[in-house]
Length: 89
Image (cartoon, rainbow, N blue to C red; front, side, top):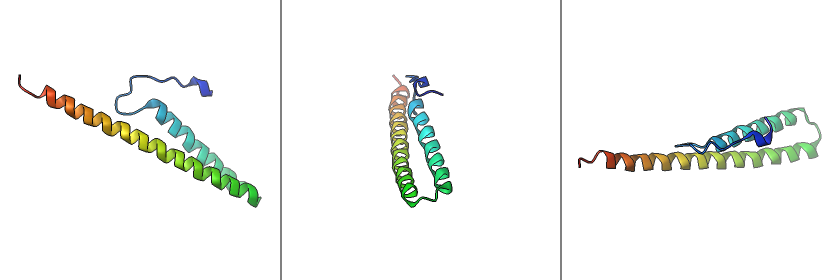
């Protein structure tokens, strides 16, 4: 899949397809870097790759946090909307 094959679906309710795809790709990169680390015997390269893994893990954590925020916000809004729908008028 080319980088420009990603299209926002604009219909996400309590999650975001774009953020989920970014999470999937970042996770794949961490796996790739870790596999390179397993094969590398040059300390300088190994150290550099470890830094990249750490940076990617931070990005993954931020993506997960943002997805959780979106989910919580959506649940809150659903709860508010349902409380209005349950009011006898």
